Image 1 (tube, rainbow, N blue to C red):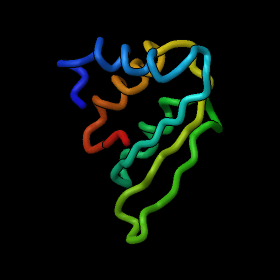
Image 2 (cartoon, rainbow, N blue to C red):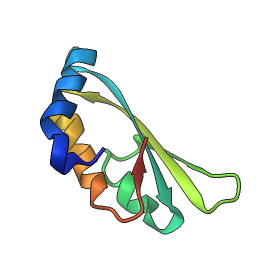
Image 3 (tube, one colour):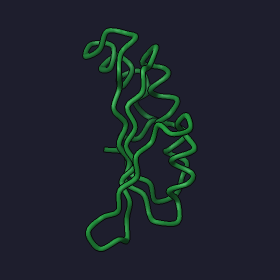
Length: 88
């Protein structure tokens, strides 16, 4: 999903699926040289990093208590600007 074309739809979808505040699971796939940038999106010690089977990519997962759909969107928007990172 590109955030530039559908931020409001994304927020509405999150608001329909969640009652805030709630735990929200973030998962990103990143090239090996970008994992520090993705991990930095989360409070220290909150992100778990695992290597793919061939080691070329890493998954970064974090489960955080989020106050609103906008807070979730803010993290996705920051990740969107990291080259090569995919949100799952």
